[in-house]
Amino acid sequence: MPYIAEDKRRVVTRLRRIRGQAEALERAVEAGTECAQLLQQLAALRGAATSLMTEVLDMHLRETFVTPPAQTTPPDAQALNHAVDEVMRIVRAYVR
Amino acid sequence: MPYIAEDKRRVVTRLRRIRGQAEALERAVEAGTECAQLLQQLAALRGAATSLMTEVLDMHLRETFVTPPAQTTPPDAQALNHAVDEVMRIVRAYVR
Amino acid sequence: MPYIAEDKRRVVTRLRRIRGQAEALERAVEAGTECAQLLQQLAALRGAATSLMTEVLDMHLRETFVTPPAQTTPPDAQALNHAVDEVMRIVRAYVR
Amino acid sequence: MPYIAEDKRRVVTRLRRIRGQAEALERAVEAGTECAQLLQQLAALRGAATSLMTEVLDMHLRETFVTPPAQTTPPDAQALNHAVDEVMRIVRAYVR
Image 1: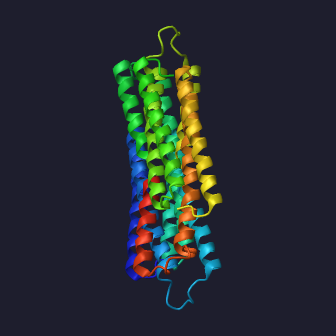
Image 2: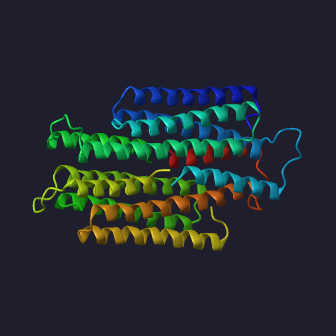
Image 3: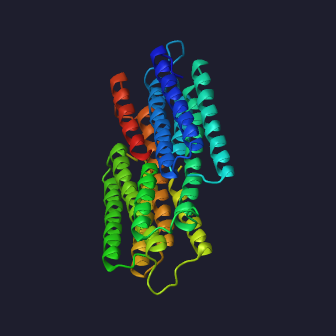
């Protein structure tokens, strides 16, 4: 998880922006906005989710493989292999 | 745009669900949830945005190429070509 | 299908390029190239397939909705709806 | 890179299959196959490239973070951070 307070703040800010995009889209639909424009706004929301994914994945890889939190003993090969399985499950959820 | 009230309701409902997913993710980050789980929840939010895109694109294609709204004169070749340009701009925003 | 000879030539050329990228990747693996570089080359091949998809989809939309081939009677609503179903099946195969 | 001969063989076999898919698509275009079918075949080729990417990325993560090749000294934090930068560059090349 984002251990550093600054990382947490950044992730929460970006999630709020995504929430704001969803609210703006609701208003746009209610106002009868054209589908083409709705689809572009939806692409922007999805793009924000993708870019947030890469930021959190970056944190996750560093926390897992580079500098595990101080209080834990260094992960052994089995734990590291399990961590790779988890990363690959995540990556597969995002690519087609 | 979604002309039929039922279509509008369905799109707004799905946008509210995406908003709810973003809120749930904010709470999860504040609660210190592990990155791997955050990333799976984020993949679900992004998947919901992708699936909503395909639903709105489907509406857009039918409104544009099959049954344009009654009050407009049938689109000529130039208007139809312009509509294809717009659809392709949208599709390119979603694929890599 | 790409009716115009020039369209056909362009699509075949781009397919040959993708074939060439696959052959180059085979040689790179045999030569012991690092995974990171293989993955970048594979991303380029996949990107070429995505970009060819958008080109052929563009042709398909125009042939179907703008200027159907001369020898066929203009498609009725049922045929056009069927064509939209087909386009959506294709789009869904490319997005997650 | 795929160090184990068996890994290499598997990757080369899958690349040959992608090459075969590109050749089959060339023949299909020459034979005047409908765009919709070409697009489905192209989606299959792209899907094969995506799935090969995940397989090679899996190898890369294990070789880098779990069991680096015997002859090299265990990577220090700087090298591991650099490796994460590289993995993220790769992941970003595949998602939108």
